[in-house]
Length: 117
Ligand SMILES: [Zn+2]
Ligand SMILES: [Zn+2]
Image (cartoon, rainbow, N blue to C red):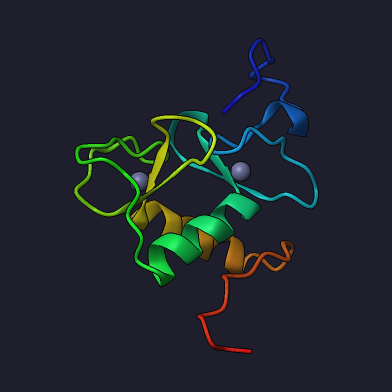
């Protein structure tokens, strides 16, 4: 999300905040952007990826709308621990994790599968 009142044509890193935890974008907190300025940060993505993709947890209510792709999905989704009604569908979590994982300038990596050293 964008900080309220920010200048859309002259954005600062600190004007960009994670929709799921509210943290600002910083050099050691990478962000992946979805539709309409929605963002998910690396730390949230680590939790989302672990719970949703590796453990198969589904915390979202039926008929939820994904914050990142704005679609209503029947897929499992991860829900923000802080904000009510903010969900990320499995497809977006996987896609976002892939984006960060592949970027050589960003040290974020997909969490290891349980049991791997
Ligand atoms: Zn976050
Ligand atoms: Zn989505």
